[in-house]
Length: 329
Image (tube, rainbow, N blue to C red):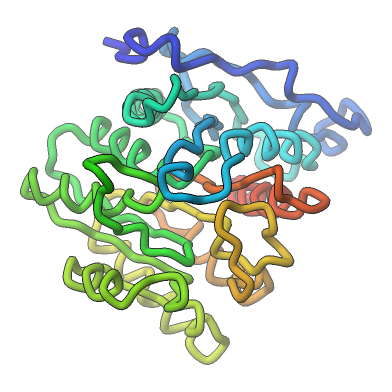
């Protein structure tokens, strides 16, 4: 049964009209992404094999609850605008598909996260590789719900890699989650179902996390790679750590919070990082190692806030992260 049918008011299928841009030619080696993008409707159970499938999560309610700068709900559209004009370099065997958007009804974040879970699970079951476009980092818990539904037997180990300045393991506020509670909620759910919690956070900064939160995360087995450790002399050791982490699990989920990056490269985020990651060759060497993990099955890009972006720098960075992944096919 397609559980999305119960959440039709929170989901809209892909819209071909948003995929437009420059046309340099009609032969494949002259094409741009908008010329090959196919829009799809998850309500009709499409075949998504050999496809990278984009799904927007148009919510920043979690950011509002977390006292951040609102606007990330319009992040998916801003990322699509940049993706549309990217040149085609990926294999002709791969298809690009836009599955549309998940929306928020008033401030009911929990229903939108559940709907995201249904949608993501349906993409995985149909053979697609989902890339969720955020949206606030409350996308994390909804993404996890989709993975959990997909791996229903409970015997699979889920590993989560988070590129972020923040651990996102704060306790619920008033019993409700927000953009900073995703991994707290996931850890609690894994514990309730007697499943191990496998979490690796890369780019973490002391200035962005209390000592209590860091100690709490470590007590739950979180592997932390701090921003200050992302230097050439430690790169190979970190890559080895990532590969060892991945070998311990069946399914790798990558989430990228754009506030992990330094402000000149990512000004359009909910929580600016003046001293974040520089997206240089060293970073992309590390990123390539993550992209090459054979059990990487889904990813999302979170916290793009177009209202604070400058010259679409943050949107272009988000698009480049996706571009480099897609070109591996």
